[in-house]
Length: 323
Ligand code: SAM
Ligand code: SF4
Image (cartoon, rainbow, N blue to C red; front, side):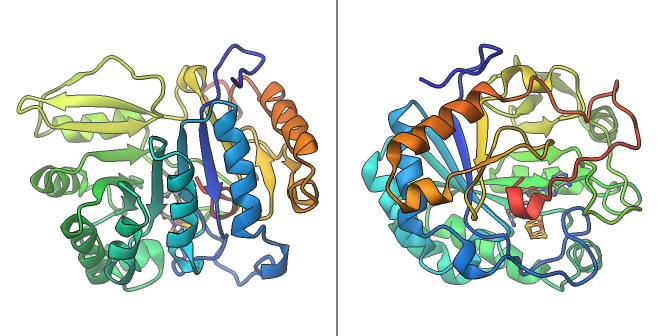
C-alpha cells in the first residue's frame, strides 16, 4: 500500500501519454507557438506499462490515461488492452477532448475500456471555437454520441469561465442530464500557461448559477473522487471539482506520471522525479524507490486555496501533467 506522510492512501494514478494536442484551450495552452518534447524523449508504452504494473502491485486500483490529447498517440487501444489484461478489475478510464472519438470509440471499447470523460465547455459553436481555438463542436458531439453508441460510460467535464460560458451552465447540465451523463464543473486552476485574461468561476458561483433553475442537495463526499457531488430533485447528480476549497487536498489519492516519465506528487507544484532511466534499464528496484519517495514527499495541499496570494499561479502546464 502507498501511504503519504499525511496518512493519505495513494491508489489513483493518472498517466499522460502525450503533451501534444489538436486543441489550444485558452485555460490550458499558451497562445504563442512553442515546441513539443521530441517523440524520442517519451516513454514507450512498454515502459509506461512497467510503471503502471508496479503501481497496481503496490495498491493502485484506479488508472486514468490523459494528455495532451491521449487519442493523438498511436496505438492507445493496445496500451489500454495491456493494462486491462493485467488486471481487468482496475478502474481504467481516459480523459479526452472527444475530437477523435468518431473514429476510435469502437477500438477503445474493444480494448477493455469502460469509461471516458469528455471535455465539453459549451454547446455553442462560436464559444467552443473561442475556448479551444478550433471549430470542433460538431465533431466532439458526434464523438460523444459514437462513444455512447458503442457502450462506453461517459462523464462530461466543463471548466466554467467568466463571460465566456458562464451563461450556459444550466444548458450543459440539461444536455448531460438528458443523455444520462454526470457532468462535473471544474474550477479553473490558475497557471502560467493559460491566457492571462481568463477568469474562472468559483464553486460557490457555479452552484449559485445552477440554483437559478434547480434545487439540489449536497451528497456526503466520497473522498476517492476529486468531485463534490450534488443531487437534483429528480435524482440526477452533478459534481463540482473545487481545488480552491481548503479541504480539497485532504482526501487526495492521486499521483501523476507525464509522458516523459516525470512522477508528480501534486498538480500545483513543480516537484517531480523522473523514472525514465530506471524503467528503460529495467531497474525496477529503483523505480520502486522513486515511487515511494514521491509518495513520501507529496505536499499537504496545493496553493490555489483562499489563504494563498492571489497573484501566485502554478507553473505546471496542464497539457503536460494531464489535469
Ligand atoms: N485533452 C484532454 C481533455 O481536454 O479532456 C485531456 C487533457 S486535459 C489537460 C484534462 C482536463 O483538464 C480537461 O477536462 C480540461 O478541461 C482540464 N483542464 C485543463 N486546464 C485546466 C485548468 N487550467 N483549470 C482546470 N481544468 C483544466
Ligand atoms: Fe488540449 Fe485538453 Fe488542454 Fe484543451 S484541455 S488544450 S483539449 S490538453
